[in-house]
Image 1: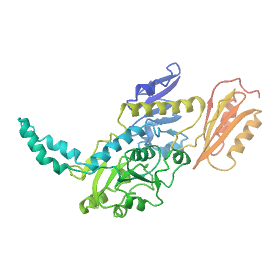
Image 2 (image 1 turned 90 degrees about the horizontal axis):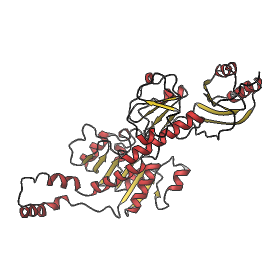
Image 3 (image 1 turned 90 degrees about the vertical axis):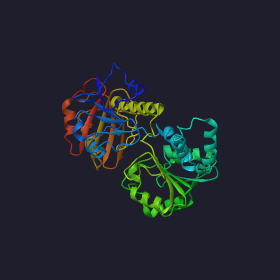
Image 4 (image 1 turned 120 degrees about the vertical axis):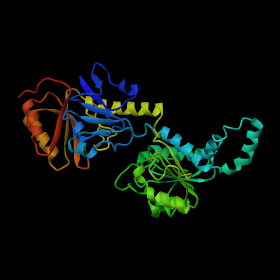
Length: 397
């Protein structure tokens, strides 16, 4: 029976992906096989030695000590794209909020509760509505920074709304490029995108290269009267630079899902309480994707959508599977294969992948290696862990 530790309230549709005859799920376990979480700030001390993998029911993994997990040979899975539609729809709302005095108008009407006469109310509204006039987004230019699962959907949405759309993503994958409309103008420089765009929407992960990416220098290139939308991560934007740009009038409005001191209470800032992925559908999709990935790893050793391990998928063969993680250094695979040969263990199929400092191997063998053979593998310098999946007859000596 596998044990999955859940550290947040996970959608029932996600939990139902684990067959109860094989899995036990609870919010407290001493020695779990896997951890499933959403926003819980996971500390290294909370990750038991028995944990084989961690599933994040969402896209970001900044609440997980990924480097520590990599060092210990623990894949961390996320759910890219599962909440993309929810974020896209909120960006659509933000574009409209940023183009017209919708929020201000709603707030103003809320101050008129003392007017009981309908005719008087209509007269006041007609006299005051001009202060909430805005402009249409059709024909305006939307700049999308980051063209992954969410950014590509935002770009497509912009086109549907009749906007001109330009995009910037130096790390654009082949898969992302295929799903991107040819009507999206590709920009070679971030400065050019800011200079051409009436609205700029950010859709980037937090990396060393993206932290504080939107700074005073970049904002100085912004098209006058531009609107900046941040539904990615707070750390991507330099808050002080945004305040300075708002004060200078370079930036007309800042709309973000990440409230911060200094931004609250400003008329030129619209703040939302981190609700980008807060829909029933997004939570269900994220939970199901994360659960499926955890199951595939636990039961078959396969890896997909990991933020720290290489994608590794091998169809199960008859026999026993060895899932081996090691430091990505020369001769490791040769040493493992030599040990299997010395033990007279026949290899049916295998796959070796690497990513950064780690390598991962799936090796299907015809029989169950002895404890002594497994101990010899684990003793090889550079081996991080060796996991046995499946059952079979013990290999003959």
